[in-house]
Image 1 (cartoon, helix red, strand yellow):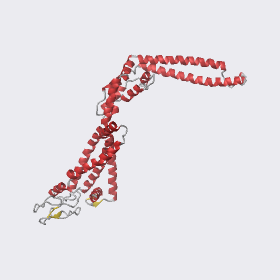
Image 2 (cartoon, one colour):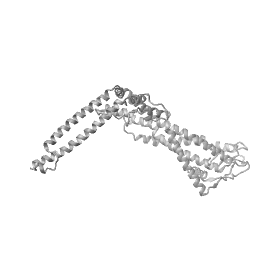
Image 3 (cartoon, rainbow, N blue to C red):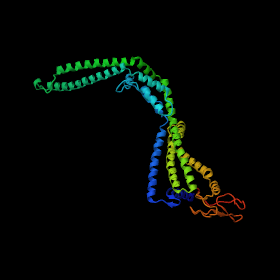
Image 4 (tube, helix red, strand yellow):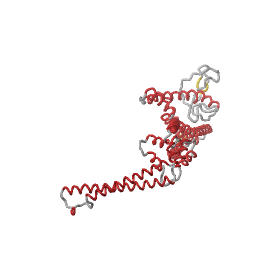
Length: 415
């Protein structure tokens, strides 16, 4: 086993740094490495772009988070606050258009409920609501000024009382306002603050009671529709990693197939430099594919399925998911290796095809039929038949002289 692994590793290194079995010079190797890095960066950029092509759960249900926060809020003023937060620098309707633009630029369909949500939210951005909201902010500024003045007066009032207790004469006081006058100012400001707060409360109620505001708030208070949005959001979140992985695979697999075809073609035709570059490209394409497979196993449908099973059966013992992965991944790897060894990279099948094409049984390069050793890798092509003792091809199941079945004990890796 270790001999086979070492053999494959040596072949990997040879394919990565040799042209027609001749080592690359250092400058050419540096150029190849820079090309690999550049291609790898662009592959990851392409993967990121294509993975964001399909609309995300947040983009499919853009109203969900805001709606859920409103339902969970215990603020008694949350109706007005929800409307006030809709305003920015102006009252231009924009929410439904923004939602639709997101859907237009991506694959997937926007939630109809959220489109209706955006339409009703745009409705509250009326001139009347906008002007009342600005007036509330202005009044709130006045209240803040009066409260700051009261704080300052109270500080002076406390120090005036201390001076009076200490017998300090009014002429020598450091405060500009006397105790009596300070109390009058405090009472006056307090009455003003109360009136201004009542004015704010009336304006808020006026905004909330308008028809467009009532329609929007009625939707926000509809628990059934929120549950529908929440269910859709959870379902979209469950499938989104799998959709992303599918698109990433669609991006990578054609590149791998093209790279593999070019590599095979260049090997058969003896185009050493093209074979080297295409081999490097294959490695560059396989690196992100492997990473994305591992990432998918951690966040995709498989992980969610195992997570839900463990959560349902064992409750809080979610660390058992890691145990399942520790058992599952080696088993999955063993299955892949068996398939590759038995079907995809079957040595007998590869040897038969290479003999038919007049190729070296070991490296796959073209050789003459009378060559006993490959001029490219030096591999000896024949073995003595144990029945007729004539030379027959290695790795083929039967002797081409007498037809006797051959027994193969030598481990030879096929590229």
